[in-house]
View (cartoon, helix red, strand yellow):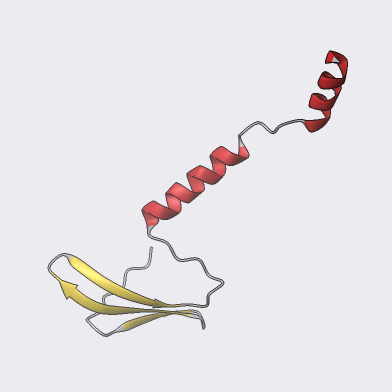
Amino acid sequence: MLVLTRKQNESIQIGEEIEITVLSIHGDQVKIGIHAPKHIDIHRKEVYMSIQQANEQAANTPTFDVNAFKQFSQKSE
């Protein structure tokens, strides 16, 4: 992990496309601004982890086999 120290109104540049600026500091809370292209998703860590968990659950959900259902329903007739 790279650790950098910044003061209010100072920035960090990540590559050519992302700039992170310290906007304000109040006690133990730091407000940051992020300039990045729209195609880059930016989330708070807890939101990102929730999205990842939901995606993993969706990937592990059994799919509905339409062909098997059609065969089953035809046998029932």
